[in-house]
Length: 69
Image (cartoon, rainbow, N blue to C red; front, side, top):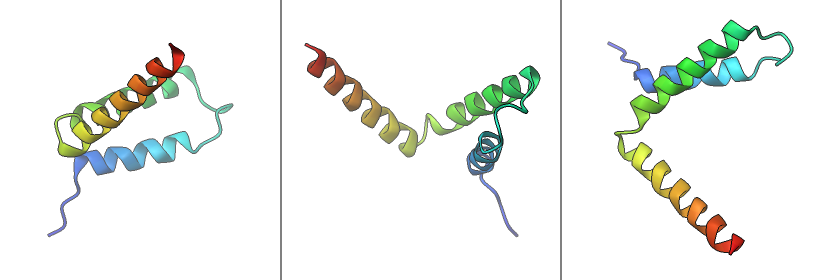
């Protein structure tokens, strides 16, 4: 039996959708992509990978803030 993690499936869908040409996208297509990305974020956030991404982005934001002073 093969199981597919929903977060992995959504990540693949996002990569495929973002790989298409931007000129051919309708407004509804863009809205659907945003909803899919938000759902992916909600699925990834409580995981250890999500916490690691949060920590990395936090450190990056701190270093940018420090560099701006």
